[in-house]
Length: 149
Image: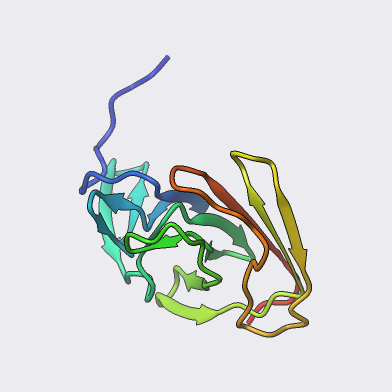
């Protein structure tokens, strides 16, 4: 059965969400035409949202995941761009630190067409998904593996 809970403070689409330490984190997204780096956290105990440190790079269609209590925001579409970005950033809920990620392997996938590109950046924090064709309206997914900061 569905229950109404506190709404997200700002309307947005194309955001990512992940759970860290029992709280729901909503990151990035777009309130057309504005792309945001906003990070908000939902506390199910108090049924309230609070705002945390924004991502350094505002983007929509971003992917999010959690490793060792860190929230990772990977890829996405910055601004009004239809080209996927190679940006990946990490947020540590305790202290609110944002840091770069140094992946050993990255898989980029156009979820609309099924095209997949895999790269091995060998720990380099700068990488891209060259060869991945993304058209307006396509959804993109990016998975990151390997050691992190």
